[in-house]
Image 1: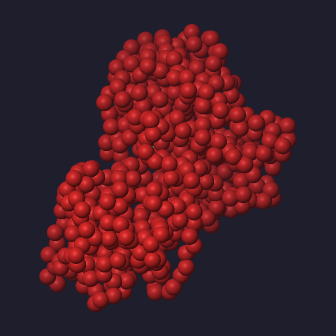
Image 2: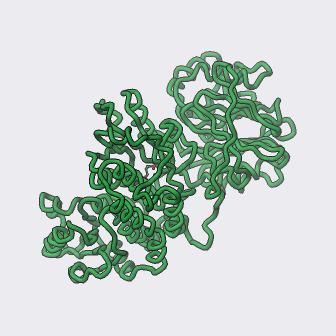
Image 3: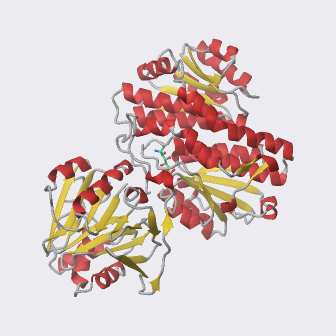
Length: 608
Ligand code: M6R
């Protein structure tokens, strides 16, 4: 959703800020703006639409070495230039970019209007510009601090003052901000990805921090004025990779990156010699693991689907009762949290408001929650304090692909570790670990050989009325994920069902114009799913079967068949999801969709 970038240093600020905003485009936004301090004045440009439109409007060679910029995803007020950030105070000497929501903005606005302030936008953010101006008596940080004391809600803000070239004041509460340390230059951004081309040295701010940034360094203090020091951390090398390389789309690139992202996730964690796994970040002793009564997994969208596989593995492999739940539902149903439950919160971005809310609910109720997160230093990772980084590297396409497989892999590793402590002998553990370690190269092999059948499947799906996805057990989670991908990327209506549930109602929808994608790895449920395939065929529907290579019976039942490598059941989602990711990509392409930035969607959903 919204993004912030700020720069102070030797370079001209505008191109650096615009470049950072381009790197944040993947988050989803509808307007963008930039403000710089040039020749003692604030120069601000805003535009509705893409950063390219803003870039075209910013004068070439705009001077000024201090600047801030923003990409806005509308919440308060429509998508207009007037509502785009940065917002300026009435004197046009102070500019503010803001992520988050100021909950008491109407009260503050009414008070300011009574005092004669004329507002120029419908946003909650504009109150910040006017309040800072009201409290400003020459000390920028003091004015920001005093303003924040009047706010209820969440913020990540960056503020510049025309009177103070060479200085940015930023603050965080519920919306992430990271400082980037360069040589004689300093950056601020809502997402480290915006900075990765300039520096890998970053400082993650905590809620209620205020930071004053200069080219030569920064000082952090707390909202109450107390001083605090925050350490510099090094961004993982994978975060510096950028661009689409030789690929036409980020989504396709990320699908093809799965062998490496999976290898990074498994590296050093699976230990076949011990028949187990080591996940130091979980900070659980064998005694702690032995005492767990129930594993509960929380997440939204794709992360929830990975959670379903994770819960199945915890139960199937580690023999611990396990369930997965959509985080947005969990947080509001006053859930019972038992002291011997252990929670996993799965999130690619680590910023999903619903998942973060669920984490807080668990913590309020005294529960332990471990993060399974991609973005290092993100709010969920910090809130949980312990967990597993999945190390997918930056995922730019809105549709999540490589994060899903890494989340599944991380949950499989955690399940192996728990299983080894509780029920599994060294030989069984070793076999599972070795199979896991073989996945990246087998995925590479499969992806390298464009699946026969894929384009026929694309044709069926793009011509159908809507598409059904069926599977059982972990393959039901894969069916859900395949349907979500096709909805997001191709805008094709889809439904996913556990295969046996079809006959309890949805089968009424089937006719020859409803393609059905069936995920049927060769496992104990295979014969039962193939019976469901027969039922579907008997209603005239066309069937696309994703099956294990060499399964001739499954192939014979299919109108279109796509084979994936053989694996054990719990590992199968790492293979069966691949053709479904490609199906969505190719269908989106065939229908001319904006694949990397589907309509209405944002990459990280930081509002409820
Ligand atoms: O960043 P998160 O993993 O917490 O995001 C959760 C969902 O918003 C996300 O998976 C969404 O469903 C994706 N667009 C799916 O492709």
